[in-house]
Amino acid sequence: MAQEKKPDAAVQEPVRRFESNGSLSIGGKKLSYTATAAWQPLFEGDKEKAEIFHTYYRVGRRDAGSRPLTFVFNGGPGAASAYLHVGAIGPRRIETNKDGTLPASPVRLVDNAETWLGFTDLVFVDPVGTGLSRAKPEEDKEKADKSAGQETFYWDVANDLSALCDFITGFLSRESRWRSPIFLAGESYGGYRAARLVRQLQDQAGVGLSGAMLISPALEWDSLFSSRFNVLARALGIPSYAAAARFHGRCRAAKRGESLPAFLERAEEYALETFLPAAARGDGRPDKAMKAAYGELADWIGLDVEIISKHSARVGMRTFARELLRDQDLVVGVYDAAVTSRDPLPITDSFAGVDPTLGGLNRLYTAGANAHIREGLGVESERKYELLNFTVNRGWQWRDQTTGSPVPPGATDDLAVGLAMNPSMKLMLVHGIYDLITPYFESKHLVRHLRQDSRGVADIELRTYEGGHMFYMWEKSRRAFTADAKKLIAG
Figure 1 (cartoon, rainbow, N blue to C red):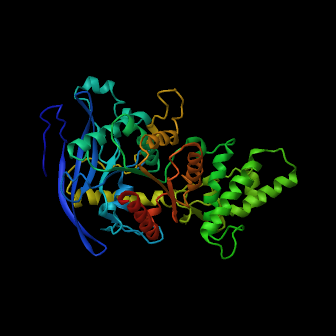
Figure 2: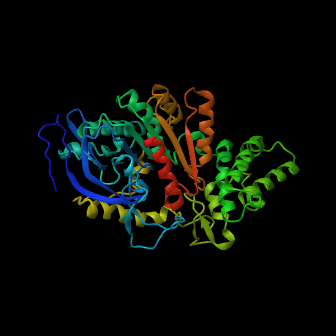
Figure 3: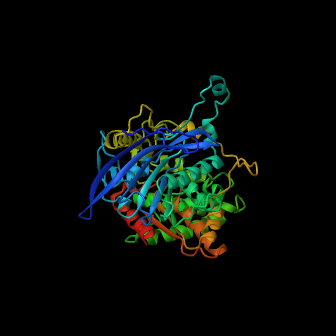
């Protein structure tokens, strides 16, 4: 263990730093790397306010300026980077079944043949309150009592983005990486972070970006979250509902021998050209036409027409997940609707269990992250590793500080501005087709509008894979994901 002390506030040295060496075989070739796990401070003036835990993997020299460098973070808000770190991108990953289902405990870590380390150095970042990152407590008890909300300062849309900017610029200075091609990779709410940072890093922090990958991103709140009156969000989720119904053999609109891409294209056309205008009209149609519309939706998403009618064709994802296979006492996941679990209390009015994917992942990713960081990388800390901190999630401050709106701005406009500022940067959006949380068709819809409204964004790439929110748990999809990332980063 190497202990570095901060001699002066202006120097801002890391609080603690643990270095180790590792190697693995990729494509029959040995790849050696250096791993650094450390806490980097965040400052307000000369005062340290928080420390960000991160894990940095590099190949070659410390100041390897020509080698790409990718900053990776997850979302939540409240999620640590472990999902991508030991699930998909890092040099070691949790072993899962090929079809995305979860193995029995205990967790097993294996060399990751699909790591991105073959073509980019990696920095996995845990925002304040996640992983081993924390706000610094006040030394003075009276001040500490008055500043009970200090940690929640970082649990805020704008302050979170500013903290990530400060972390990235500080890291580039510490590690002598300002000359490196810089990429971002963010998953879920981390995709929202990355999309807005495309503008903020360049505009306010002076960090030029070579590219960004948005993974199962949440981009626009009004087209993502449905309500009684937001039928667009309902429409954009239908292709994922239909894909799940087809996977489980419940989609009556599927054609024999039809390929999955051809099926999804038909489902997308139905969602926007048939369902959306019909749903937007409300109750203004004759009963016969209404019944026909209910029946057509039921055929696409595999539910009984009585359920469609009961919900006036506005079927929420949790209702869909509970009802699709209810005759078998099974529920499908909202994070991956191809994965099922037994309904523990089938007689209750609403589902009383946990999501088959997200709920099951906690035991594997918590154990896997702790084993890798503490045992594999040698990090010594009594601090609890927060994989998914619901205190952060519940305490998150969404209000927009500029307008006072209770909902923050979407990310797509910032993305467009950032791309206009730097036309040479590359952008890719990736999704799992069975993801009901952030449906792939929402991103496809937004990209279409970006291409229509903004010049210079025609080369935005969109990729879809079999799987859900964490599609990389499927072996075939993880391999395709890595291949696409290599094309984006290595060019």
